[in-house]
Length: 496
Image (cartoon, rainbow, N blue to C red):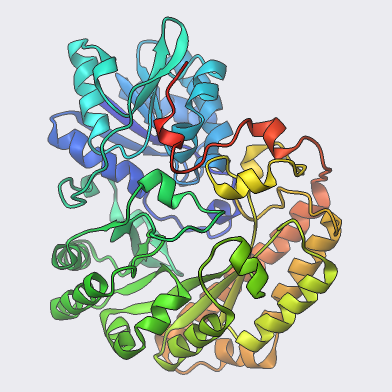
């Protein structure tokens, strides 16, 4: 079957500001198994330029796909664009199967199928096994009700099959690297780059996160095989930077240490950036030299609150002492700590933001990034926030960089001012400026200056965006999105 994998253009700040683009890993993970099953697969990455609607439709006309698979890693904020494109695609590819996948449609399959007739099928959950089975069934005209992990219309109404089994062996399917031109993908200021996953899921229970519900269980790839793949990408395709998409790649000290040692043994010069928990950095204090030797340069550490009460409320499981210690340990070993801080929790006051600034100054992070608490329906945070009013109903702005929920004790304009003040105060300190412009290590100097330039553009863009786009509280989160779907049962909901 002729298949086009479509990565829609994304309106989020993270897609438009960097002027660099990483390849869409999710599409490549689906593409590899489809190619191996004998299908003719093409990747249409409309997020690159980005492509206009007319350019996307022209490309599809020329490809004449029998199936169009739509998805985006920014699942919620890309959802409106995906729906709009599906309707347009139906007009130029009337006979094609239009298939939609990702986190948001996996949970909102009923609404999506009811509201968008152009979408035929939704793949719910992991797609590496489900997608090839689906395409084989469509080719043979077989009954789709026998395939787990799907949603479609049955007798005119949305219907879902049982959830697909979890993919236990992450090395059992391959990534379709042949679908991309490596020379067109860069990050980190011109470095040839790709996204990879060492693991999936997270063993922790943070209330705002859907990792545990969607992936169901933390799993990791074979450490030696994963290191060998990175080495091959470097030697064969000149890849210089690996951006780990994992939420928590270091969950298993044993597996992570085995990976670091295997990558060191490969003897390739690559840079690795990713996210992890401050607890794991503190736990691994005695092997952080292996992190550095393997090429690890920056880790994003989520500081979702700098007071212990907030950390307990969101069930983060961390502590302020470990957060600060992790930042210091990374710096001591020649690595960068990028600290995110989240605002938008219900009980916040002006005094809380002032305390947040003071705590962050005491933490002394190398880099900072702000995010806004966002009530995705499949998280426990949504349950707690269901009766809070939403500032914008346009899901394109649900990208963690726009205020979504009203903060009852502080008006939205003042929350925004506090966030901008905190960012400026942290980044304009003499100590912080010295780390950017007086840095002697060439890799750290490049990283710090690139991020500073990027942050400056984002900061100014957010000001312009805020001043030109007015918001006001409207519906509650529950009125907008419907009933809660807790992560433990969301994918197993049966259609009525």
